[in-house]
Amino acid sequence: MNREILINAAYIVASILFIVGLKMLGRQTTARRGNLVSGIGMLIAIVATLVDRQVVSYTWIAAGLVAGTAIGLMCAYLVKMTAMPEMVALLNGLGGLASLIVGAAEFMRIRIGEVTPEHPAFTAIAIFFTVVIGGVTFTGSMLAFGKLAEWLAGRPVLFRGQHVMNGILVLATAVAGGVYCAAGSPDAILGAFLVFAGVALVLGWTLVMPIGGGDMPVVISMLNSLSGLAACAAGFVIRNNVLIVAGCLVGTSGVILSLIMCKAMNRSPLNVLFSGFGAGANGSAGGGGALITGELKPISPGDSFAVLEAARQVVIIPGYGMAVAQAQHVVRELAEMLEHNGAEVRFAIHPVAGRMPGHMNVLLAEANVPYEQLVEMDVINPLMPAMDVAIVIGANDVVNPAASHDKASPIYGMPIIHAHEARTVIVLKRGRGAGFSGLENQLFSLPNTRMLYGDAKASLQAVVSEFKSLNVA
Image 1 (cartoon, rainbow, N blue to C red):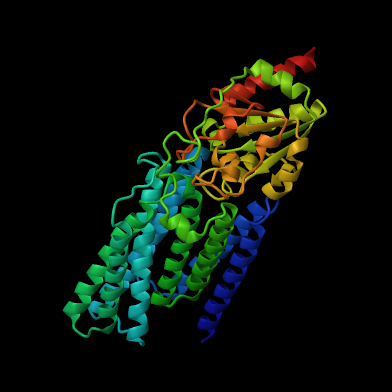
Image 2: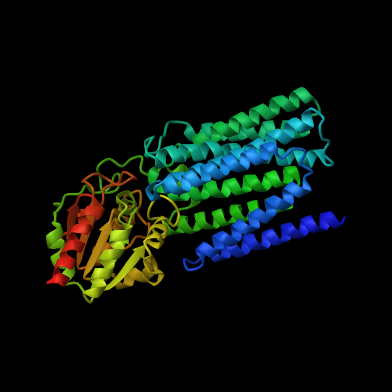
């Protein structure tokens, strides 16, 4: 009895640390400590579980810990910041796969008579949800990983009868789950289990397939939520309280984050999942909107320096292009040069900029950009007409004016950063192609916009060099 009390007390401490750590992750100044606090909580939970579960042999557990630690360290040191979105998708998928394996293992233990559940019906329901949610999360995340890594096309894949097919798959999963939970025959139980497990794996792929690259930040958040729900269900399967708590925290935080990002795009979660955003984009301002007819006006790094040297109010709007170019450090250096020259510099962050939630915040934090300089969209937009220069680094949809006035555009109604209202806009872009979502940007052809083509890091370094030569002189 004393041992059980100690185990549950350890789980309570671990759960409290999870909650405190999650709260601390909400601010850049405390995020690192929050990560450490959550890690300590997980360590306590793991140790308590190993003591509680009467492990016969620790050999395989030790092997798993060594292998997992080695892989984790390799990922931490070798995976570039540009690959972080697909890394998050991959980890979400592995979390779903782990839950699926737990559910399948418990199913096999019950089937061969190794264990007899106290509440067979409840355990069967828990196994069903664990396997289904874990399977959908695994294959959906793998597809998201392929799109983000650009191994697969980022555009949505749509075909006639797609929603009907997905509906049939969902119905087949529910029917097989009902048979599994109600059947008394071992053969019927095995057949039903194989059906809903297999269909769940297919369903994860078919649900993510029609979602375009522009919606990947929301998809990652949703898949993260599903991985948490799968872990929660696995906690009910193996009767582990701390796993239930941790899964609930991940699941609910993922749902909240998904809703926040959907609001930032002025779209519903159902619209994100089923609209096939970007499917109709083909060289238009918004996939069916007015064609871009204006001339794209290039600018050189030297001329960009001349514009910035005279500026007193500058806003920097980062996007995925900054991540691709690994330009966050030179961006911070440019901001420091501008401030030294007497300008006030702000960083405008759109909630869905980049390819994962908080992508730009992570990159700027890595470059030690002061948190106070990061400004949310609702705060910067009223100030935008007073900005002398807006520097757009690889962002596309989040500054596309089509969202404000082009009713034919797929992003019409989406709140954007009003970069076009600044006196001068300098857009750093690798080439003349459309963004990851496939939509052309009307901002690029406006009279006050200049295009600084080339690698963003090299272009900004050239501008910084001009500032340095000015200071030396």
